[in-house]
Length: 281
Image 1: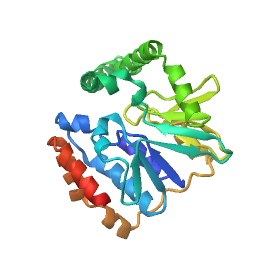
Image 2: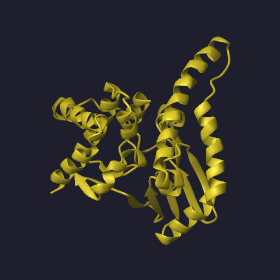
Image 3: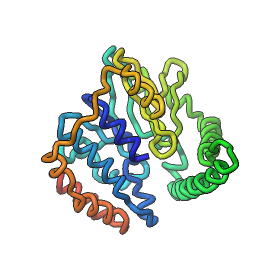
């Protein structure tokens, strides 16, 4: 869904973007998955927006947990941390965290989490094969991975008292709401007095959490964004800009991106952390 991410980013003008973890799936890279030019295009689009004035805050996820040893740090003016608090135009505060801390498998049994991530990648491939067959039969698409995630979400919520943990942490931080990712399932719900938002992902669902002009927070699907774009409803939507060649040349350094990916793919996370620390000093 790299193309959809770039489409959305190139049509918005916003003061701040929170990247809620796992932007680069270091677990997958260490297993031998390949980094593509499309992935680099997304990174370049984000960097271009940063150069042009958008503030970025990166929240560490569980698939880039090698950063734990270096946090908090700032690289190129972009802070990388475990959590942040976003205050809306109408004064509501939202705790922004990746959300893996609510998942005992991710925090206490990391090896199970990695097996789960490997299985999820397999289900994504199975989705592709099965949906080609369903399309030939005139049937709609079906996602095995979404079905499994929905089942797992219910099991984790029941077993770990998820709702109560969300409410307690949000209240402890003095916030009215919380924005998480991790389970890749977009959600906009109330847990008691706590506004719970899950940004979903850009692998299957094509979703994010946005603050609308009236100061309210909600989940935005890519399909809804396309409809808004056609109707010109959102004041923050702008015409897709023509790329500034000078900025593009400055940011199109594939060697820097490739070096980062090579370090992760080769299991050199410790060396990468040392490099990040040196950059931050």
